[in-house]
Length: 288
Image (cartoon, rainbow, N blue to C red; front, side, top):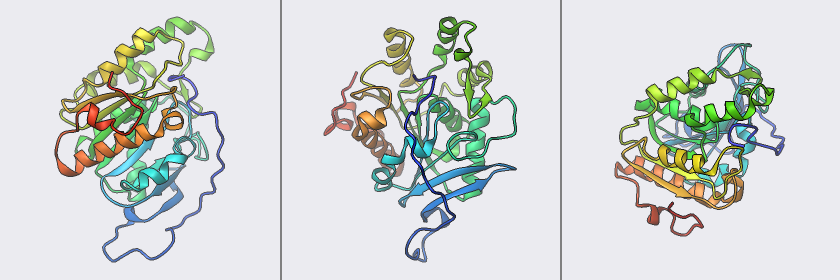
């Protein structure tokens, strides 16, 4: 489930170019104004939706072949109460245009996200929240744009060590191909980039949110190991375990809210993340 389709619900969202209700104050910037629109990033347009105000900007990345506007719909307002929050549909997903055909990598998708943020005047620094396959994109975004990234939350994220076992499991079955938004993903190039550029994030505030139960075709032992490994990517990391399944935003949304709030607070204060027990206080999460 982490590698395959990460959304099954269909939410119809009407996108219009708007600046939201009311008049922004004189101190407001374009990135502090509500936004639901489509943005051209070079011959094709991506759908983007934002809520709330404040810095850092929370950027929500959906899972494999999934719409961000759909995946994160129910959490936009709660997270918008913490800080400015934006999500989007990657090219070929949801209501975004397909990109020009060709092979992509998670690195090229991270660069695509950066072009969207620039074109939309959504200002950094950014706290990037990546679910499932979106964890690949989020890690590579944080690595490539380190000076613009204030924190990272990985939600039951995929891990590069799963790629070979997936290949063994699926064999020649096309179900094992990596395709996002209709475009084949060069997963070997993606794995190389993750291992060579996204293994050391310094002391970037990082919360790894592991689901409560395993819902995939590989082994629980591998899942536990790879989730724990993700928490070694930063010197300031906390590993927590939610309840429910892979779609933590649906099964245990309070845990994601707590994780994002902790990273935003750390980014604002310059202090380290709280201990795991303090971070999960008031939620059903545990400290694995």
